Image (cartoon, rainbow, N blue to C red; front, top):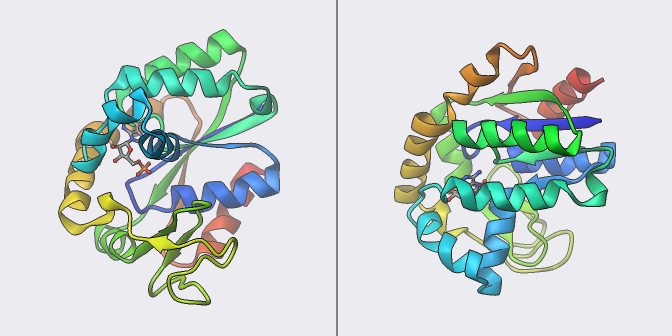
Length: 214
Ligand code: AMP
């Protein structure tokens, strides 16, 4: 059972690395951010509830995200493992995850802490572009698409996420430091934490993650 948590501030590369890992290890990426954005797009009750928190760069209430993750982890494709990207983000979420994995007979093997300095995070987030059709991610300077504004993979239109605007980003970083950074302490005693130096090239960072997992 390869249960993995990707921990790190917004812009640390959790989504980028998760997408590469799902292909290599054939286990699904569970991104609460992606699931919430889909719910907002589809206009479901969940989406309506989550939208205002997301637009402000705040955190969606614990019970909402815990419910989504619990349901998702119960799906058959999580049998061999899963990559949690953006969850848990608070101590109560981490406690709930411990309960849920226990109930489902699943286990977290590694907590990968992606470490990037703040200046680089801002650069990454401000230049980030996301495909509205398939979710692929680009960066105007560091990882530009072949044709401007168009996804290499599916041809879909690239946009800047609403919460990737400078003011919202600052809020997201503040919330990270306040609510999510304490998770490093939460997992410290478990022997599962591995720190990944996550500045620089995507492929080099990926290689160091694979080394840890093997
Ligand atoms: P992300 O794509 O992971 O950056 O998530 C985008 C936004 O979705 C966050 O800024 C939060 O508003 C919300 N969100 C995603 N995951 C969580 C979570 N585990 N707990 C609370 N809010 C979340």
